Amino acid sequence: MTLPRIGITLGDPGGIGPEIVLKSLAGRFKLPGAHYILFGTRRFLEREEKALGMALPCRVRSGGQGAARGSLEIREIPIRAGPGKRGSSNAASGLASFRYFEAAVAEARRGELDAVVTAPISKAAWSLAGVRWKGHTEYLGRFYRGAIMAFWSESLKVALVSHHVSLRAALRKIKREALRDFFLSLDRSLAGAGQVRFEFAVSGLNPHAGEQGLLGREEIDEVGPAVDEARRLGVRVSGPFPPDVVFRNAVGRENLFVIALYHDQGLIPFKLLAFETGVNVSLGLPFVRTSPDHGTAFDIAGKNRADPRSMVEAIRLAAALISQRASRT
Image (cartoon, rainbow, N blue to C red; front, top):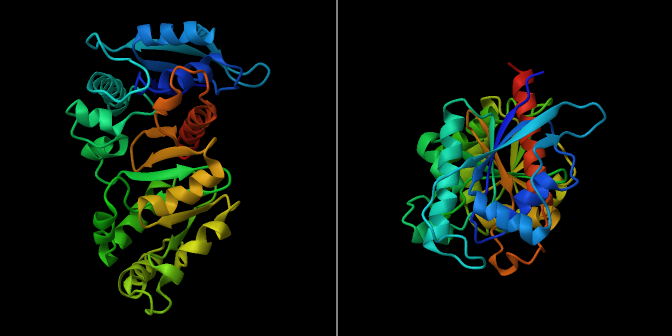
């Protein structure tokens, strides 16, 4: 059996990225057998090893007796001296985290990695460093225009129509044609991500999904027609449903995605339910990309308080999605 090749980026060295990466790889978690390539800087890893009293293993064993073994390789990314001060957003650390991600994506685009798992970065630090993309998904959109931000857990799955834009800008995206195309793209991108085809429940925009136009007409004029068109084209999509009940009704339904019309509409219920174990997934790419569903947590960086479970689940989901893709080719 060929083991998957999974790249892991260290994230912002001033945040909790190095801590959760080390805890994930050197802790007692049962990780899938894989060839792991860690993109980062050794001095930050060594600092974390000393602080936590842990060491990266030479080999990474998967769970289960007699299971296949995997290797761990550190890909040293050259950076200038200076970054890594814990607990703050700064240009040097922002540039370092971008270089790690840039290198991992380059290898994935060349077909040398099956997945990229990214530790948290600071959007503010990227901006200070002069990086013109707001985050991971926006950078990936440079190469893959249809990249979709989604969030995955056992209890709830959410896809976002818009993400890192202002609410005013997000509202401008609520147009029939754009929504129909989003539904079609999401359906295509998930075609190989499960044994059963996914269904989609679309959240409304207004209270009570507009209450038949009394509280807003976006559901009548834009969202509803987009749902109808996508359904006629074969997408298993329904809605729009009142935003205050659609997420509750989706909890526990393994093959259902809720489509949220803007960032916080989807992320508030998701993080309430699955903050410790939820995973951010970029869909619509030729390789798998996952990430923890939380940020850099500068306030607890260096204090040995970071919970690595979301990072562990991001690694596990990456391996599972790779396997499911392989089984369908």
